[in-house]
Length: 333
Image 1 (cartoon, rainbow, N blue to C red):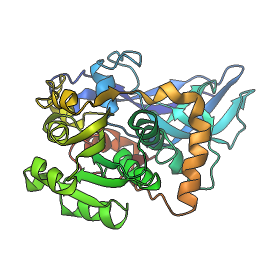
Image 2: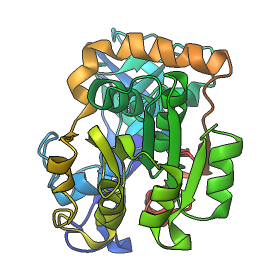
Image 3: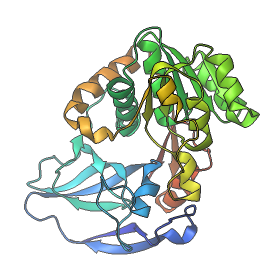
């Protein structure tokens, strides 16, 4: 019997501007019964990432472009409610790219069974792309060694908060940049950062000099723009600059102009590199186990911000761009 589902469809490409209400359209459609090898999945949670704006703009060439009318792309946790010889059993929970839809028909390819001792939502946060991005960016690109100073922008975000804690586990000093006293307090008291810089308090460059007197050995940048520029002004000799994201550009759209202080890379014999976490996909199961172990022994804390109701998906995505989220942004259907 066909299943009726609501879906959020892409209705605009927000290039050169922030995401607007008109960029999504709520539609209702009927799904066919699962064919041979297929399953009917019910989405239980959606996960949200700043990268989704880049997907909407079609400027991210590591994923397929999105056309107007496509179901909005996104990660989710879903329950198998019907199976026609599919690879997962009825009642199994799986995670991967589900899109913004209440129900979907899927063959199971590129979905992973939820198997964790933690809350199931951890597979979208600390054990999901968030935790994996923190881990791979820091250790594969940043290559910290004990005693290094690691400077993280967007440090109170889902990825940034994990980066600092992993840096501490590697024997490094962690300094985070975040917006507002509340977030900075959380970084030091809960996430174990050695120091926090409130960019809203002004003169970020001077604050960085104060907290990183010998310069930063590793920079992990989630923000871009003027924050990246301030960090580049205070790198140590041989520094590694990891470019993970650029949330500062998502509101204005377009790509940011190059940082004015990039010449410091020459003076300090430093390197700056971007990465896409999918490059290490074969290592994800092992990295997930390691991260889960850190959470289990209390050395890694994570936050989840779970909103409610499928109709609120567009507003929930917007929370990322106005700094409302505390940790990984999710939505419970």
